[in-house]
Image (cartoon, rainbow, N blue to C red; front, side):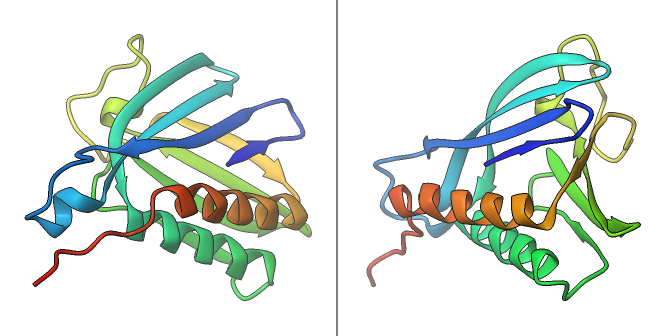
Length: 153
C-alpha cells in the first residue's frame, strides 16, 4: 500500500510475511504479520520492519479505506491491537487527508518514545478518494499471499 501526499510525503506499508510461518497451535501467532513501512515526511525518511498487524487488521484496514473512498464516513480513526501505527482519515474541503501516527517500533531511531500514545510523530498526506481506494485494493492483494490461518480442531 502506497500513499503519496500532494506535498511529497509518502507512507508505504508492505506485508513481509507471517511472524511465525510454521506455528500451528496458536491462532494469534498464526496470524501475526511482519510489516515493513517506509516513510518520507517533513521530519525525515525512515524504514521499519516489525510484527505490527494481524491478518484481520489488514482486512479491516482495507475495508475502512473502502468505506472512506465510498463517502460512508467523513472521519475515521483506525487503531490496531499493537499500538505501532494508527491512521486518521478525514475529509477537508473535498480532499481526503490521511494522518498516519507512528509509535514504538514504527518510529525512527532519532525519535524514540517510551511507549505508545504520544501522537507526536505522524505523516500528513493529502490523497484523493481514488488513491484511498487503490490502497485498499493493494492491501487485499498483499493479503492474498498471507491469508488468515486458523487452528484445525
